[in-house]
Image (cartoon, rainbow, N blue to C red; front, top):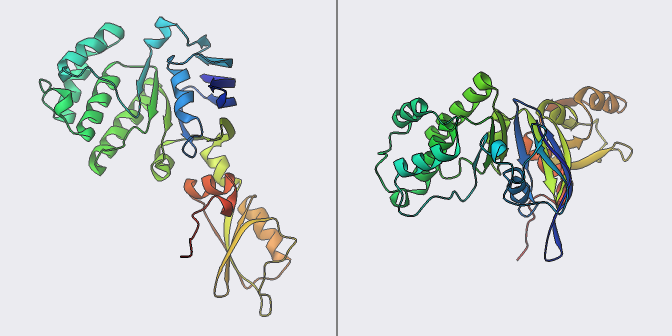
Amino acid sequence: MIEVKNLVKRFDGFAALDGATLSVPAGSVYGLVGPNGAGKSTLIRHLTGIYRQDGGQVSIGGETVWENAALKARIASIPDDWYYFLQSTIRDMMRFYRGFYPSFSMERYEKLKDVFGIDEKRAIRRLSKGMQKQVAFWLALSAMPDYLILDEPVDGLDPVMRRQVWSLVMGDVAQRGTTVLVSSHNLRELEDVCDHVGIMDRGKVLLERSLAQLQDNMVKLQVVFQDGVNEVPADLPVLHVSRIGRIHTLIMRMNAEEATARLAAYNPMLVDAVPLTLEEIFIYELGGANYAVKDIVL
């Protein structure tokens, strides 16, 4: 389990993390989402032992991460800007990884060579961004980590390779019980792989729930009221409303059954509950229409 409690980190007086708290169950895939500047990458750098917190606690598997070499040998990380030695080939970096990860598997390294199909003798700096990201996965997965920390992991990969990479990661979760924390702006993709989600903003984790709980706690309804009712009744707890013709689209913070029951009192002609996407949940949890895309009139 990954646990962060009341984490604080300041840079020149600015609180990049301001009491962030989250919990990642063992063997789960946890999606960390939030706007730019929310503190996601800063939090990840604490989980990988790069930063030392100013306050709060960071633990993985019940152990403190900071200056814990034995624990770090069980954690593999792929940051958004992956580091490698400028003159190194893939095989050079493999040897470097083997020196840090006692569980590094040469057997798996050779198998993944066939999956990615990149010449291991090529200099990494001469590879495209997408190919460099493939190499990062190749090495990280060969390290056989218990914990995998990913920051924008599939940025730059083509759709086929994205599917391949996620298949490998999910295979490790299913077969080895690997715990995965992934930060990404690709919310549609996270819906397919995550079973828990945390939403960050301004250095705090606003909420964290299983994806099923998140989707059950907010609903989108398309409603057609009786003739003469042109506005949504004021006593309905609506987060956001839009209208096209006679069809009102309502966002309500409750499950579909409860929302349908509340609307029944107004005898609507039509009520249709539509599942919210993770992107929609993200927008409305961060402030509803005020956070949505704004039109500018020139």
